[in-house]
Image (cartoon, rainbow over all chains, first blue to last red; front, side, top):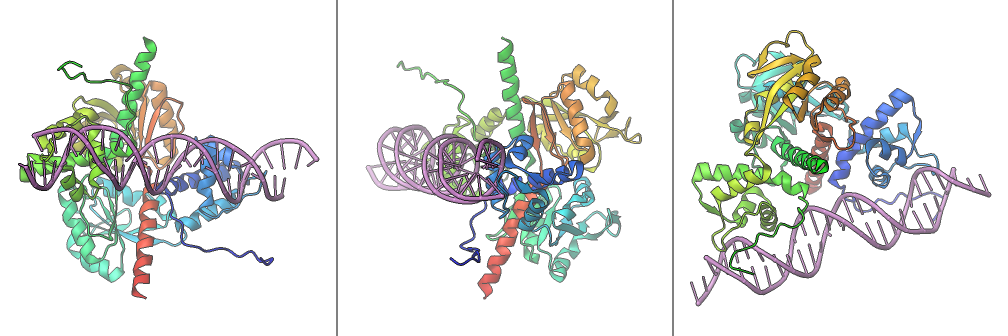
Length: 227
Length: 227
DNA sequence: TAGATTGTTAATCGATTAACAATC
DNA sequence: TAGATTGTTAATCGATTAACAATC
């Protein structure tokens, strides 16, 4: 070993999905701590307490971003924010098309936060004649018939699916044929895609089931408590 | 042991959350198989193949609903659908209030599927004067100032939060004070609640991160493949 | 220095997967 | 009957949690 620290590369360690999902939560928290209270250094203990995550979990999660802390002091908030953004690739924006400019699609188009997460929705597509040609939240609405050509021309890799259930599979097929590699599916329909295509399905039924089961359990326990 | 099978009760076995999230997926699939192809019996192998879940996983998941299959034949589709609905409590509806009648709120109000999942959104609340007093998707819009009283009067237990980030915590507090026990949080803000209150946070940043990381990995692998 | 906190290695826990006997 | 599929028990895997030495 020389004095120069050799950064060992090794095979890319797999990132646990739960960790990945928590990183944006830490990021939001850190941003808030910085803005509201101008905190410079922070410990896993404090993060954990505030977010109701066990501190050791926080440490493990942050480790994956290669952030280093100082014993006794904690992590530099600025550095941590930066490391998370770097790790998540929020510093280089990628572009996406959104198909289905209904209420849900409009809501997503109107959510400016995505830009901070490295995502920019460049255009929307819809079959409704009254919407085609207009702008929604500053983005042009094109007919779905233009989708394939535009995906190819602009080299778009991500598609956001906000169409009704019955149209979901067909639009997904079109997206894939055009060259889209990742689909963010907000439709209530599971879609079939070829191997190698990534689908992230926001399944509200699944989420609702988790919430209602927990709720049912709480209410049952409350009842038992009064007996 | 008599001839009568004694159904052993035992302590309620904990339900793995991943299983819970998959049950609605099976349900949707089964409904589709029934409707489109009139399938009467189905095996875990087939379900697994179609949904790209390993068959043994499917079996384990279905086991929790107490559904029983016939060796060689598989499960009765009708019975399975019924058992899942029963297990998830989709046969008795519960009511919810929605706060924030923007595009996202409107989208949720317009999604009729919730009724099949045992959820009915009875009313919406908003501070926008142009919305208050109108109907959206057939539901009356009330001012937020009426929320507390109406939650109490109607004994509502679930709140759906579709307000902008900066209003989220305040509305959540109001909900909790009024007696809401479960909050379905669609705002991009993590909310603090007292112990015992259930929060299901639809965190789009988390989902996006998972999708983009996977996408980045695929694109990287594709690149390596061409070299 | 003393002690809080990080970094790292080991133990635990829970979900997934495998193995195999029972059965229609 | 033969064989596919269920039901059930065991093994594996990965994420979480614990333990403890290193360090500022």
